[in-house]
Image 1: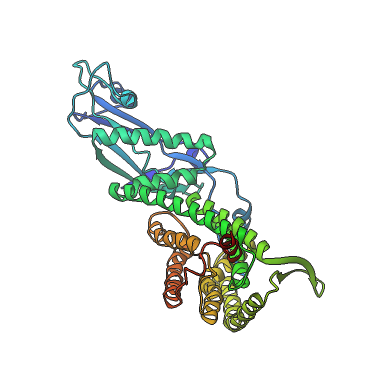
Image 2: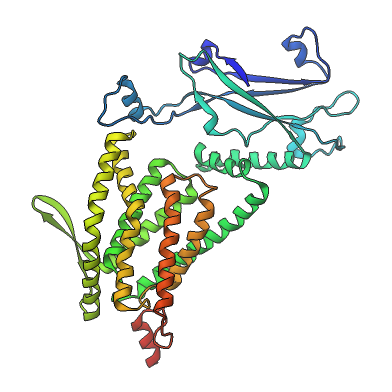
Length: 448
């Protein structure tokens, strides 16, 4: 660890470089140019400063700030300013190997320096993968010095070549529209994860994407052909659409990983389409306020019975749900800092979604209990989603995501176990109906 002095030029949005020399002998008195031209010295030059948009500051929305500029900066500061790396890792290849003089690997050409004896100097390189955004510290005029950590890490020839290839690929992501945060997330997978765990993660990620696709495909197929809504909770469907939308806005506000954000966005589209399929949405007025009125499309006796059970279960849950949601939002407003009123609104809504989201899954469980049947559920899509839930438990410890979203992954496991218990308790008569095909389609197949 070093106490690094910051020049005035650096504090005024200037640059600062690190010059690293590795030599075989120690000179009593050395000068920069002498070391630079020493034939047996390995040299590394890297930039310590980086232009970055500062993180938004949080503050008490109802409190008094000692500095009013904090609020304005937290809301409007979007220009990049100079940040400096508080931690830097450099690699030295310690493996004793022989390399061909005229057929060097392309990724090593710029790193190799030959002496007059046709020997290459020790390879010193800046560790690009361990350069993380979390190590950047904003430079201000008041910071005349800072704590700086310089880390030495030996590296083998094989790993050095792999790191060079990965680094080149990650640098090219910027031209494809990826942000610095997206690239940093990918670097974290390589730098912070064990190699064997990384291979397992890549395999699991492929399985996760496959199950996501199959779940979306079967879910859309089920709802596209379903006309009889008996046994399906309209309030649970509407809640899923609302909660998915809130979670998507929350993940956007937290700038989470695209691996989590993209499936969430697709889920919003599908859940909204399912609401339109099951409920009739019409604009109306609640007093003088504009409002949306949801009415069921079902008119059969079975569908009306389902809606009766659905309304009964929600009436019981509302006695607990609404006071807790309002109380949690008020507590967050009074005692927790936020970036803006919009951020407080989204966080309050998503806390209600995550904390009490499983309560809105209970109406479907209640309907299953009253009807003593689970044949009306899209079980194929549900099982694919259940498998992904357990995969999400693994990703919860690897991929960067908000803590509330991480806890919600384990909440879904509990709900899945209840559904599995009901499936065992109310077995499906397979001779009567294919659980993934709507009743009308199956009857038409039998008549043919």
